[in-house]
Image (cartoon, rainbow, N blue to C red; front, side):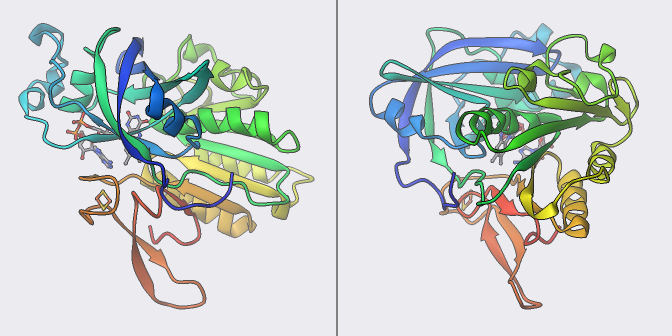
Length: 314
Ligand SMILES: Cc1cc2nc3c(=O)[nH]c(=O)nc-3n(C[C@H](O)[C@H](O)[C@H](O)COP(=O)(O)OP(=O)(O)OC[C@H]3O[C@@H](n4cnc5c(N)ncnc54)[C@H](O)[C@@H]3O)c2cc1C
Ligand code: FES
């Protein structure tokens, strides 16, 4: 995977819904199928890229099933498309299947829960740059906070398939067990590095789970696990890379740790996005200019969402 700006083959495509499965209280996995030009455009989708879904005509779930904290926001009209990354991309004959891991946080994601096999969704993409792999890397540490695990799961797949010389591990954190977007009994997960999370274990990648309240895995911040792991012996910093996706406060700490240890680091940033392809200028990210004290604003949708951790002004 090389460093690029937003994809040249983006377009507006129609995807068929194959399945929409609830995996935990607020987390779902949506599987979509593209055929024709959409299948081709999304077949080269890179981990960290995203797509804009049109959910304005999607139905709301029955009122009695709407979580209380979303009851006021639920009826809000949806004018703008919403950005989502993909958790998996697979080719099946001349079709491309993609998975989206999503969390119900507001009116659009609430509507998304009613999508079912037989429905279709209008999607703009592929958008954004995605993660890239610089030459000479032998170890990759994937650091996920909450929903940030989605694009890193797909990155784990691509690293395993296309970069056999890179050994990867994954660190996944959240405030509490119920905010971890994984299936299974998370409260039983050990505090040690191991094949604890099936979404990474299926690619032969070991993982550590951390929760702020200790309800699953390590009791503390996932960034503390990162510091501890990087403190281990025999880790040549120039052959390592950290990939991170999650809340901005966590990305800031990951970038700080990477800087202290002189390790390359890429962070996937989030901004509210009105268009998703460089027109509305609503998604600015302040970035340092190299060898200068000046900063400039880059666009999260076109120049990102993945940035070099050293360049972002958090
Ligand atoms: C590049 C990118 C990739 C994304 N990938 C995923 C994904 O794979 N899965 C997933 O569940 N979500 C993802 N998101 C976030 C997702 O777009 C929002 O959760 C969604 O738009 C919320 O829509 P809503 O109408 O349900 O809630 P809204 O009412 O729009 O938002 C609910 C709450 O979330 C906050 N919020 C919403 N969007 C953002 C944002 N972009 N940055 C910071 N705060 C925000 C709002 O301020 C509000 O407090 C991604 C966002 C970006 C920018
Ligand atoms: S979302 Fe419109 S310019 Fe980035």
